[in-house]
Length: 236
Image 1 (tube, helix red, strand yellow):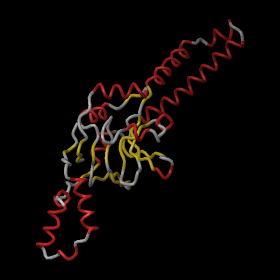
Image 2 (cartoon, rainbow, N blue to C red; image 1 turned 180 degrees about the vertical axis):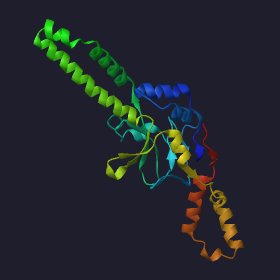
Image 3 (cartoon, helix red, strand yellow; image 1 turned 120 degrees about the vertical axis):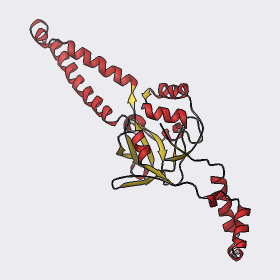
Image 4 (cartoon, rainbow, N blue to C red; image 1 turned 90 degrees about the horizontal axis):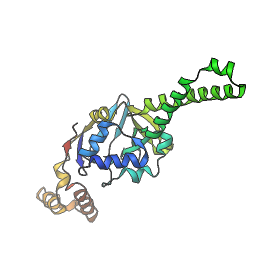
C-alpha cells in the first residue's frame, strides 16, 4: 500500500489513547500509528476473494483525519472494534480491540469459580450459599463465552457498511495482512499540474477550444488535493 502520511505519532500518544478508552490495540497497528499516524491513500483498493473495496484514507490520532472524530458515530464498545479508515463512499474499516478492565474482571471471575469446592458447599453450607456458588459458575461460563468472542475479533479487520448501521464483515485476520492485501497506484503526474500548466498543455495540443470555467475549477480542485501528497510504501 502507498500512503501520503499525516505525520509521526508517539508511543505516549498511542498509550494515552488506549487509556482514555480503556482498550488495547494490536501492536502492529500501534507501530503504524507511530510511524505514519494515518494518511491519504488515493488510487488504493482492497481485494480478498470476492470482496473488493476502495481505501480512501486511514485515520490517525490528533491528525488530519482523527479516529476520535469518527468514533463519535461508532459504538466501539458494542462492536468490539474502532474505526481506522474509510472508503470513497463513507464506509468504515475497523480493527478489533480488547477491553483492558473487562479482561481483568474475567480473569478474576475465573479464579473465583476455580477455587469453589462445590461438594464442600453442598454438604457443609446452606442451600442458599450453594445456589450462590452455582450462579458464580454460570456467570463464569457466560464471561468465558464473551472472552472467546473478544479473542476472535481482537486484531481482525472489518468492513463496516454505513447503510447497514455500520454492520461489520470480517475481511482480514490482522492489520498487517490487510495492508498487504491493499494495492495502490502512484498519483498521476497530471494530477499535480497547476491549472495554468494544464491550460497551456491543452492549448499546445490544439484543444484550447474545450477549456471552460468548469474545467478550470476541476483542475484547481484536483491540484489542491494532490499537489503536496508524497506517497511512500507502508512497511513494518
